[in-house]
Image (cartoon, rainbow, N blue to C red; front, side, top):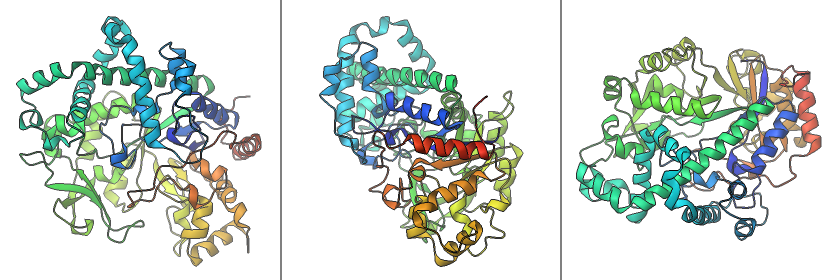
Length: 503
């Protein structure tokens, strides 16, 4: 990886007239901002479908393969001739720095159904659409039926469905497939529109020299098409319920650990099947992005398993995972996978060996580095490694300014000032001082949150791990990323040899 830098901003945080950001005009404007500021990378969060019932978390999705249709751009649908300006203007909302997921979901679904009604009768005659169906049938058929069933059954979890379709008998799959055929086609149409728009954005990014970094959560949501259609590869009982779930032990974010509740994998069955589901998932994501951040990487060496009836993650235990065998198969014939290993938290030598054996860049967080053990802390600037991706903070951290005011203890503040060579510093300068510090790292790639370019405080934080509500809502408003910010970022990027511009 060439020495470079990039910005972390999820699509929902882009400016938008429709409640949340999407992959329409504002995405192109942000991409151009990155290119003009000498940035090579744009990092985003997972794009899989979620909902208000899942707290709108991009890490809780109904599918590991499908896309969130809330990210579809109405403006681009007008360009396709599926809608007109007057129709989409009826759903326009005032500018806001907070995402309105419910309004956006209602607007996008209404507009998509309007567009679908105009083309539905001829869709299967469109060879581009039918080719999309063939290329994605390994996940699309199950997802479309799953989504249609949930709508028909009032959102009920699949474990509460009638037993025949819960257990996917051949007769029930045929029956429900015919009964819900129109809705199934609509779901497939929505996915087609998204991936058509996604392809256009990827083409633009390639033209201007900006690469996308995606995010692959290690686990999937229990109430998802993946678990319903692939029960054998998860630790489930005969009724489809988890008998043990995922989590992490006590760490920086929580004294009692985190009880995520996702079903854990039956790695024995996955290995017997040549890890087919996981290889397909990796290939799918590496087709969407230039690079993919593999969340909770330590879980591929050993993972924290918690009995389903446990009240907290403290009751869990470590279970080994066959990460070496998985990545041996996944890299066969391709050389090196373009994966970034999220190796934060409790990292043991076996995890480091797995990461380094496959030459995956690891991660470091500058905000973690200023404690009492700064001299030997792996996150400290002087201990960074070349083959790594370093952040001031990720979506799970406070903003730089928020960290200094709310999270940093007295030792961390003192060490940070000493590291910067100051006795005192105005808090309005904290964010860019940490950006400058990270730019000087030997690490090949450094990433900054957009909120830190704007010097925002804790009110702009994207996520607080362990808290279900109130996250993921921060959003840019038009004009917030100014020419002055672009110039300042570009000059600093060039100063530290990270620019992607070609003179």
